Image 1 (cartoon, rainbow, N blue to C red):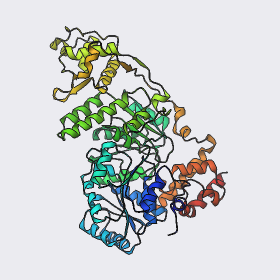
Image 2: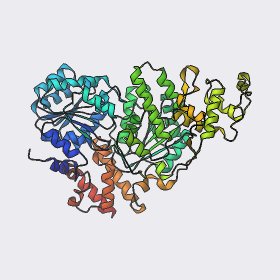
Image 3: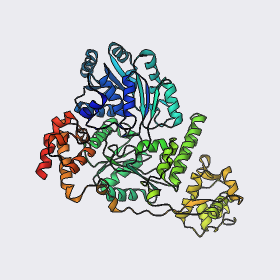
Image 4: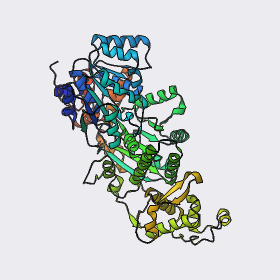
Length: 599
């Protein structure tokens, strides 16, 4: 094959230039080298193994954790004219035999398999009988017990080094802190691999985190004012909350579907397929949903509960805006989220070292929620990436946080914990501070202690904010063996003794204004809205005809460029981002005719 990486990038994918480390990775693997590749979601990891697989002799074997992810990528590659197939439990034996024969005949470009399927004797024998171009281990953070998506099956992949020593191996992921990276290298035998670590920054995502007041209503306001008609994902901690939230959104006129492990495999698969194939659906889900989703035009990811780590948060929010267009990562969280996660962690029987690691990750997540400076800087810093400039695209940058001298109120809150015996929950402590003579307070004699009625300058919501911040700062903790009662931690001593001061954030109700709605963020002029809808309708019709998701035909970013450029010839259309030769042949005339007709 006389093609070069640059030629393939344009003719096949319709892109003009490589991004970041892509070309370096591709050339290194073409030359036979191993590689560890960290790129953010939407950063173009797939191209790093797809192009070398096409330019090297043999079939590129891609190890992927989920059937849905494999099927999605196979559909996308087949649209480009690439002979890609997947071996998994969802295909019948006849199709399996056909795919295996194609591999043996050298007719396959890419073969996707799960780690479980790869390790079977029949699959290993098949690969020994084929010419293999490379092994690409996708979502490679799954190999790490320190990671957030640990899959024990990935631990067996080290055998590729022994069984196929001369074939280049790639490990790719979007989310891995330093310990996870080190374990990936160790577990996969990639000590000699070249490491390519790109920026973790996703500048198109706007981060917004606020205190939970009426969570579902806050979510509805956000969706209706900023993302009416857009695809989005809403994450909840429990299955029950997923079901309730999805039903409530539908009742409010927002098309929504639930997704969690309790639904049954057929219903989950059906809901996921609808989310991929239809426009404007909102998926309400537990964290069981998402790894297998390549849908590039998810315009928002919302969290109604606190994620357990910045890695989880980063990966989940990274499912928004994979096409590079503006997207939102929106979250509300409250004191109960903090206490519930801490209690749950304390009650697990995991290894002590891993438990300490999980605790520090939760602390970092809480810290991200409570900071008063740029959130993007904090996220990048967590992944050991320094950023000297504020982003201008998070809530703290757009609406600087007001703070106040919280030294005195924090001392009152801490003293109340101490005076009441370090065994009561937040609601009871606030009743003491506000001087409410409840039966419980009288029975415990807490109307007689020095902190009773000492905090009447604050209302209940303000005191909850104070206690939430004290938890996030590691000055107090909840005791799972005492029904979540608060206890003091050693770092609070300087504050109690008058040796330290404390600034706290001043929580305020944040209003969501319509001018920042998706249409404005995507920069679609009112005069172009009709054409925008027509382009999307044509894409949907073509997708339904071919039984593929709409974004497999063209991404939103390609349609947006057509909308702005309004190409008048196939030559002009060929320069639109994402329009390669195959897609130009298949769809160019249809989209040109629509643009010209509308003009």
